Length: 285
Image (cartoon, rainbow, N blue to C red; front, side):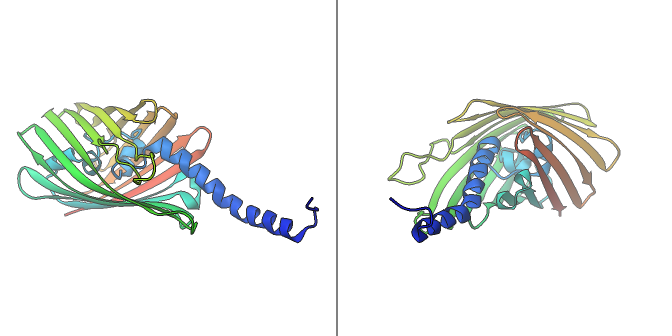
């Protein structure tokens, strides 16, 4: 029997204690991934403040919506889930119109730290089939890795497709499918990247007010319902709020907009895990 003062036992206990913070980070990471659909298209603070709604709200995240962009833009976003350093999430997104009916979509996201991290690179194209109907598709390269030398990094290529309909300036409807073929992480395992479907609608009863409803279904979890509101308080200021279920997350934020610059700030509140702030800055060419 090993005695309490056995040096080997002390060494093992010390090693476990040193690794415990990293283990907790991974637990929190798993919870955050489940709550926010990390594997979907990178999103900005405007969507985050409106409960996570993207259809008709975030041109890069909804893909097909990029076809309606009038000018090219690039955006940087940063968030820190539950104010934990190990759960930082940063994104870079860009939309470049190629004419009157199409646009190139590109993005990159990084989540986590050296202990555990996920990276995603996105490239695709959106085009209008008619004045009101647009489609889009992207290729998504996913990478995950840890500081554990015994963990094999995962590298996968999957895709996303979308369609968006804007019958008028006050209404938008859209469908977004991420990883529709449920691609596996690796051939030797049954684990798969989540297949995620989003259906949403946006309605603007007056130009100053935007309302959004969206339903998200992950292949491995129950449906998630999202709702958001945005109001143009004054010429350059917008206030926003939203809510999402499964888990319940409340959100709010504001935005500032000028001809060439935009800035959005959002806070998401999880009743158990705490707050997640997010900041996005845009440059419109």
